[in-house]
Length: 609
Image 1 (cartoon, one colour):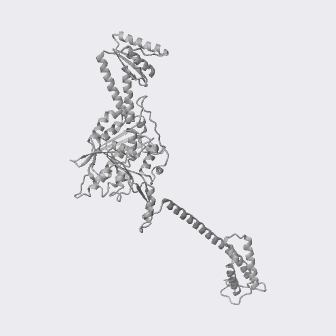
Image 2 (cartoon, one colour):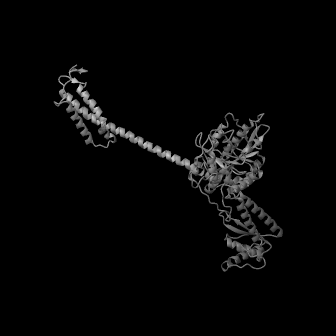
Image 3 (cartoon, helix red, strand yellow):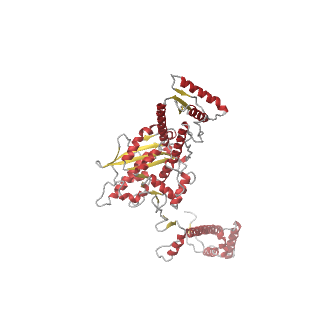
């Protein structure tokens, strides 16, 4: 059921009735943003202690607005073995009740607004028709203002409004307002003399002028008239004066008091729903609900305290029993059979074996949700499937009993281990905030199957753990500083090895190029010599002299004189010098200046085929 400002009062009794009948509730919220500074990753660091996580969220998330609140109530029907649900989707906005009401400032995060818009979120329902609210402190201040105004209208206000002696002596009127007050008094005299008119509507005027009118009339006309302030459609305030007897005056005062009380209740608005949930003391279910709880307490109850322990006490006063389905799905016996604990994927997984989806139907007059359509990120729908996830997991716990229990209620001792523990994102081994006592002072984050980071809340315990590990055979402990230093050293060694490897590869490549160039020069001269000395036939096999020359060249290339080319730093001229050297070596082998034909041929190719 969609609830906005225009239908809130008419449907409030349905909300109260649903809360009263329910076995448990599920809640969810949609926000104008998540973080006003750090990224979500920085905001939810895996090494955060519960204290650090709370302080981060309080500092960087509480200036956003919770502007849609989903509530789904679940009641078990024993006759038909099914749950009956009532879903509510509240659009919430802190519209100022009057000029004295708090003018709330909040921020928006563009990515969050864009995401909600992509999901079809109707922002007009929030900003134009959102239900107003006040927290307890704001409500107390507004009631005090009404009490002061009532005393003022009766001529007994405090110094901040009128003089205590107002009813005994005339009020002092500034010179520039005397004419205005005289005109008002004259109109009232005409009203009292008239037998036809019973009411007089004065023209809209300033707050100071209204104050002077109240003070003057309470002194001048202690009986016979009733004074009230109303507001036009343009929000201009004016005074209405009615001619009454004593009995009518008392009746009008009672009506005015009832109207003021109704206005105060309207101003408190949606906070009345939170008060009803809190007063019920029933189990409240959420999914990854730390932010939902913090925003709910902060906006509708009282500002969050600085100290984490105070926050825990405050939260358990508002919500005596909380259960986080994300934490429940992340611990045994569910951890090994549920791979993905995001709400949408969890709901799908809990429809499969070994789980049994619960039998659920909406109450008469309430719209039903179809999980096949996935109306995700509508707070009412998210609250609904959160409740379904809880029922499936709770009933699965009942299967371990002997005999197995098909239905596990919200009051069962089987689910008590999950009470008042709120999931902390990205903290792996002890991922919750314990609302009922001290948090565990050891946090573990696994690196791989055999190594893990262990965080201790007391630094002095680190050295004790390190000293103890010296006598251990199955494990080893090192400080985080040692771990970081070792990793840095390994990185440097790896970088140096990589650089040396590339240098070696480059050296070999350049050495090969230089050798290849030298051999090319050698074979160029040899082939040219062979070509000129060959008569009638082209010889593809080297002569013994040539083979001997190539052997000598091959040996010479491995000499240190050629190995100097390994860095490939020698210029092209050096290669030419070596080529000339090879040529001279060849000439030395042939005193006549040429290589004679060999009588023995390995293979001869005829000039023509």
